Length: 352
Length: 202
Image (spheres, each protein chain N blue to C red):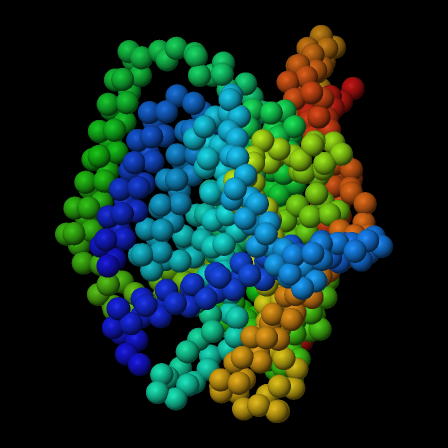
């Protein structure tokens, strides 16, 4: 295929982007259903099982409900910022999908080599961090523009929390970057395919980095036990109290897409990305079957993380705010720096 | 294609910059400034400098401006809005400064156009903006300036800590406590704010 033709190139990229974005949204929709069913299971309830077989059509019923609800805009809100906030949140949640490697490069007859990532970017990891950090504005602005003290408090809490945990999140990734010597996510995954696809960085010198990353990532996505920005017993619903109908649905969507992208980053950096152990012994690398199975392996790992999120929500109580800040600044941050020192020492000794 | 992208993002940056100066509401100014930073980052990408673009977003749009927005949200925005702006001498200063800026830009354009660019002449432009080349440059050729900058930042941090935690006279302690009270009451004694103001020592 002629990749130099801008029309073919652009068309293929558009097709790939559509598949990736729709696929992520479908997975996210079913994460919401899974969350309700698993939580119900943990709490000894049944959960939604009426729409379709075992509730499989529930996400679409929810979506229809959100579309047909009345859209209420508070009287004293700052109108422009009020509309801007959900847009910023959703954009920041979706943009990182563009750089994740969903599978290896595969070679097809007649078509040639196709990469199962939308794009390769020299600074893909920094791009992900940058776009994620822009997501803070959505929440902060939503809280401020609603002209509601509970919303404002939710927004402030969220900004403080996300700024604090972004530091340890960024620092926990430096160990992997040092080991891989690149910021290109596809290259990082390829380097983990040693030992028949078991060269995962969580096994090779980065278990501490993985732990720090997971804790900070849960805090970054405002999930239990770090869900202070929307602590319903204290703040009604936090920053999105005044949002209704589709605008509320956008915040809801963004939260789950954030969970998904954060899990994808954890998988890519620490759990070997699309590497399925010993798959290269069964299927020849580079074939279509290899690509599909690898992508499925990636999806399974990410879904494992999503289940872990739901599990946490069903079992853990919420932090107090001062505990949250003390934990982030006085424990997690020094630990992340310690991880960097350990990795640097190992690298200097030539062991990694 | 690159030209179209450059014109689009350049126009976006200039529009956001004009909006930044023209808006009266500080929060709208901050949002415009974020717009400027992001459009600049996009221009860096089209100039084959992805690392600088990413750092621009991470540092300026993602960290510094979040703090600015945070402060604007905590302060009373309405009061700032109504304060009359003193013009007069400001206009003269503005004219002088913009003349200097224009002269500088003109000089750079003239200089780049007139002198042969060493890098372009060597034909080794492909990896100038990449992470590896920037890292090698920072830690070998420019190590001393890099370290001096970090010491400068450390001094700024220590300075702000000293200013924030300085020992106060008893009357000032009372006044600061009052300020903290009024600040807290604006957001109904939230748990957030209770942890923010530093406790005066002594």
